[in-house]
Image 1: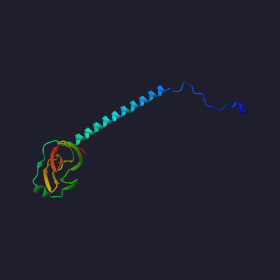
Image 2: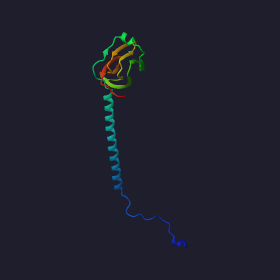
Image 3: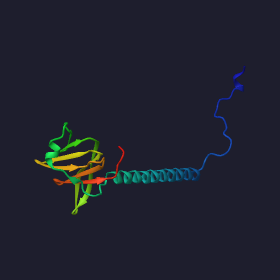
Image 4: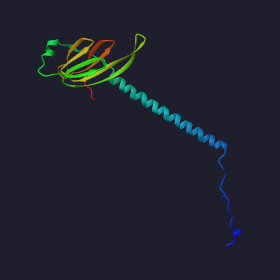
Length: 160
């Protein structure tokens, strides 16, 4: 084979090379796609946050008070759970806690919220003081502790 018949070079491409306007259109399309996707994600995140807020917000009638002698005379030891500086003792049920942050009197305040699923009795201890609540009848409760103030309300049953 003769070497003068072999030619080495780039193969010819058919058609024209993309011009700068075509690249600009592709870039604009990518930016629009990313922007739309981020808006969808932000909308979904706001919806999830709204569901979490609705789950943790407490509103309802106050829990019935309980005579401390009744709680202390239980035939079995209550379940004890410390959370931050608060000590929760309950007879029955389960609990879950978190922290929320709200503006109270113009200042941002971080506080705890604990939800109790159907305890019979509940005791909350904070700073040497104790509060006792009667939740008989399988009622659920939510307790908030804001600036050393304990508040217990009866809430609808919930799932954890």
